[in-house]
Image (cartoon, rainbow, N blue to C red; front, side):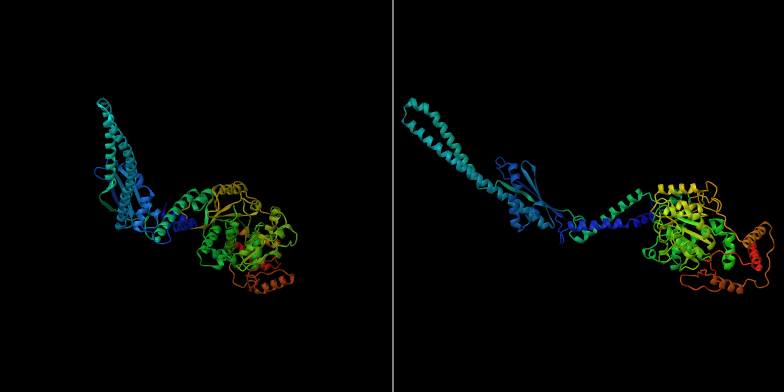
Length: 633
């Protein structure tokens, strides 16, 4: 894994790293003593104990080992060293039989002196204690043997009396008994003497001197709590990194450009970096709130790519910003505005954010954008523009309250952008899109571009029903939110409709995610897979006579090139006519939308929220529009 990808994975799972580090700190804190710990394993001392000379036959190694391992020796050593924690002292010593005639004590301590003192104390306690035990045992044996000797002496005295009174023949018979009694008494008295000598001397002794050796310290046996907690932090981070890498390997969600293109079989035409929480809380599009932000430039790049690779009806509007409102109305009657459906497979893919910022980016080119919120389950588009809730598409499609499209168009704070909110859905949302074709046909004549925000394709059928009325589809994907199988399902559903797909907008990317997949091609002007069938026909709109003449004039201009006409004088439909038209609109009660909500419209500014109306019968207007359409085509 490349270092850049490794840091991306660690940044993605930073919460896991923090949790592992915190857990290690808690465990280390609980397992570390309150004060600075003592490194009892820094020094090691050894001392051997053997029987004294001549006592090898009377001293048994198993008896000495059993006594040395008992609590009496440890308690005596602790008392001598003035140590109250006998259990800790027991943990610092071990005793084992090196041979049948040698015991070996091994002790540890933080310093050489404490280690040697503990070994000496244990050795002395063992020698002294075993000697006392041996003396006590010998005294008991001597007492028993003396009783036995007294009985033997009494028996011997009786035999001697009988021997002195007996004749020669009887003495010969008593002589063996007398000899046996004398020998038994002599043996008993000898045993008593040996035990007396044994009880007066030590049976075991220390052999040689104490062997001390420094083992050295380590992080695991560090005497300070700070070092131990630092070690816990390092171990927690290492555990977190390993867990993050394992989860990254098991995570199949789409996060990169190459993976998204492969899963959708569509080109990624825009990569939007991850937005901070503060930017996500804005109640206006990022394009207007933060014009210099990198994410704003990414949305502008998406706009440019969509204009260059999108449907011809969208790119043909280039240069239209110079038309006044009357010419713009005629142009929309001849060429209705294209409809771009922004959709996603799942919720949380940044669909509404993309619609709001794409509308603001398109408005920067002079186009007038109408945004339709067709997400009837979770309408949030009005919040993106900082607008309150109100009637909208739900009421329009259901026909319950308002039925006029113009009455629902609300200007936003973004210049050249208006919207129709989602409204309050009172019926089943899937039934509201049945009249979508008729409503979109009217909406095309009120803007240069119509953007639609829809419900998630995999969660609702609304978006699938709206696809047939769109000229192009833009799919949004939030990095880490969609799995390959879901992307394949979305691609399959879009392929069935036959509607051209402009491409995929990948949101929430960490960094540049690699090179474009060379196997993908942009068929014609539109990215993605080619349509599988004929495109759905757009509903035919009624055209005014003047508009029809203009369209015929434009067609004639395309069929037969003609030199560019010169205009030497002022236009006949200049400011006087514009003032006359505005006065007429005011008398008819038609709404006039300015650059923003609550703003005033300047003279000569295009007002694209009017109802489509027939052209005035003035001949100069038709002639001028015909010439202009002929030039642009």
